[in-house]
Amino acid sequence: MFTLTKARTVLRRGDSRTVRNRLKYHIKTGRLQSVARGVYAVVPQGAVAESFVPDPFLVALATRADAIFSHHSALELLGAAHSAWSICTAFTASRRVTLRLRGATVRIFPHPTALARRSMIELGTRKVERRAQMLRATGPERTLVEGFRQPDLVGGVSELVASAAGFPTLDVDLLATVLECYALRRLWAAVGWFAEAHAQSFGFSSADLARFERHRPKTPVYLARGARGGTLIARWNLVLPPDVGRGDPDAGES
Image 1 (cartoon, one colour):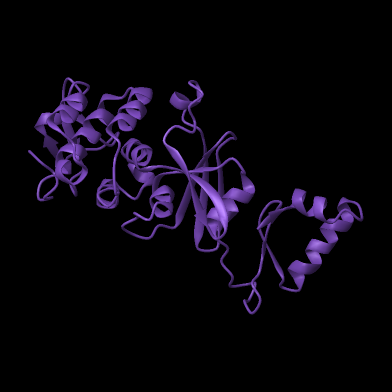
Image 2 (tube, helix red, strand yellow):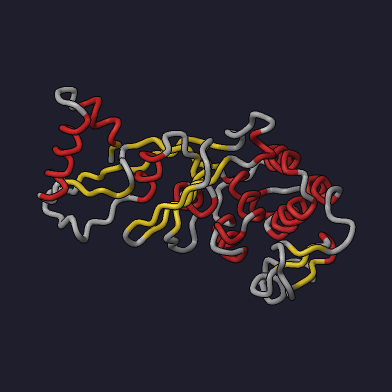
């Protein structure tokens, strides 16, 4: 995967028009595929260009070198995703962009304002290798919070919970730091509910749960904005989507 800018740097001989003509030639012969404006993928030997599907993660990285992969994409990079997902998401310093690829969609979002204004855009992130490339992704703690903040980008609350349950560890202090940045009571409640439901697996203590509980909403709120119906988790004053609460062994008190 490479950009037009990189091609110009490598092919120093000739002007921009010459470089573009060479790229067009290789696209025509099936050696390259244009996947987005100014972004090209090398078609593997033996593959057919018309049916070749480039890695959406590498497309996103080529498009935005500062990409921090998030939501379900982070779950995938962390090896925790419960289900396959055709949407690749990442935070960057640029404006919102959507790229539609063959069989996948790349969605680029500006860094969350709550973190950008504190100069903490890399809070709770880590480097992950994918196909010999180093990508930055939100780690388990940040991914859990981002997933509860925007469930639609993680495949829903059930997908998030099933995936996050497979994290090897969760750092309660880092969770609290991320939650403090967002300062949203519904997120404190959601993480508290998850922590209570998986207290034994992650070693959350009563003091840890009380730490989250202190910031719960004063009155019941829906986890998903604009939602209707669901299950009220009384301790957390949180209404979970219908497919999560009652009947889910990890839902806790209802």
